[in-house]
Image 1 (tube, one colour):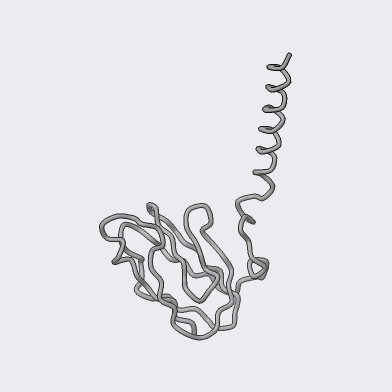
Image 2 (tube, one colour):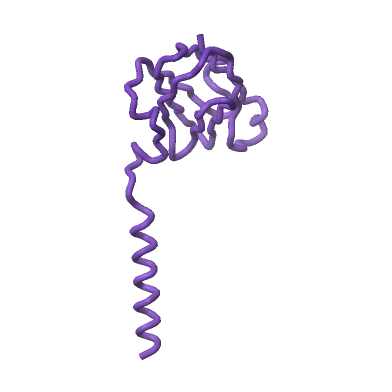
Length: 124
């Protein structure tokens, strides 16, 4: 009798935990209020083994821009001074940035060339 009650309690707890894990689709997971804005432009940053496809990306200032990270391998970017934090599982965001130059690098340890994965986001 005790075993069946314990099994039911464990099953109930497991069902509750699994239902709590869902709720958001991949498109809206981690969305910030800025992501609900309509982007006027889309910037694609391609990350492959130990390199980004460009040394710098030009973005208009004070304008909603969609930043998309295309991945070939385990890479990510986090741009200091912004809300940009992309990687596997969350590869796009819409941001409005102030003028300036934002240096960024790969945010996920990706191997021997990891330290060489650097680029700039130039907002003008």
